[in-house]
Image 1 (tube, rainbow, N blue to C red):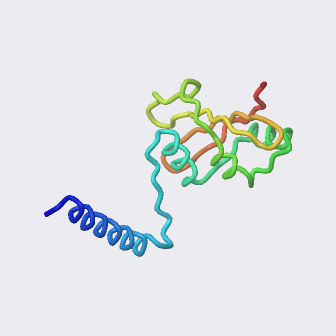
Image 2: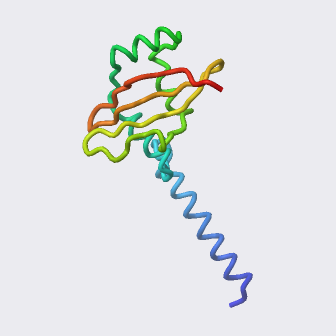
Image 3: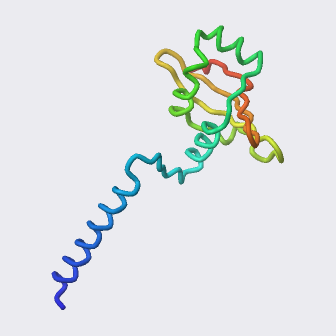
Length: 125
């Protein structure tokens, strides 16, 4: 069999496979969180979020609504050098994110069932 024929069969099967996948995954919230950054943010985003009183005070001071937390989380980058990932039970992650006017750092304690926002502070440029 010639290479062109083999390539045609391969591409035909590949396209049929893609169509089948699109049919089965249509409407599902399938995601590919392979990067370490993406896995941490997805893990935090799936859990119930609690805020410490100091974090709520800081949110009010910076004039940020806690309802925007998911948006801040999606745009965030995890700073692993400032995070405490060697802890046994609840790891503490430092996330750097931004709004339209300010750059922020969030400290989040990621436990088994709850993600607790410990602090939020303004980053200097």
